[in-house]
Each structure stands twice: as C-alpha cells, then as structure tokens.
Length: 80
Image 1 (cartoon, rainbow, N blue to C red):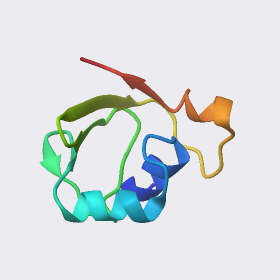
Image 2 (cartoon, rainbow, N blue to C red; image 1 turned 90 degrees about the vertical axis):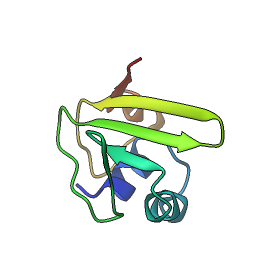
Image 3 (cartoon, rainbow, N blue to C red; image 1 turned 180 degrees about the horizontal axis):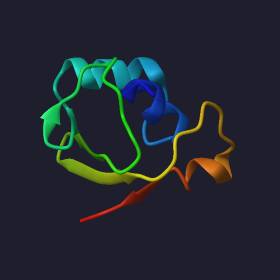
C-alpha cells in the first residue's frame, strides 16, 4: 500500500494531499529512509512523521483499503 494512502486510512494524517505534501518535504521516513508519496509500506515497517516540533513513530500492524474510525487505530502502534 502507498504510504500516503496508509497515513490517510490509519488517520495518522487527516487528508491524503497533506500526507503527499509531507512526503515531498521529507517529513515522512519509512525504516529511517525518506519516503516518496508512492513508496510502498509493509506490515512491520516503522514510520516516522515530523510535524513542527512533534515526532510520531509508529509500527505498521495491518493494511486496509478502507477503515472505520475504530479499525484505523488498530492499523498501527505508537512506539518510542
């Protein structure tokens, strides 16, 4: 699944266009490497999101094309 779509479906980022822009500005890393909007994400990958002073680090648990609000929270786990 594309990283921009995963970020939107998991609700880590609200809109896919914002996720795409964050990737283009090198604010999204997959396993420590800069991600492009079309980069593929797999189960077990670690995603880092940098927004301003905040940083979120999450591990991918499941991939889903469509998700409800409740299911979105089960797509990843926040790690430190």
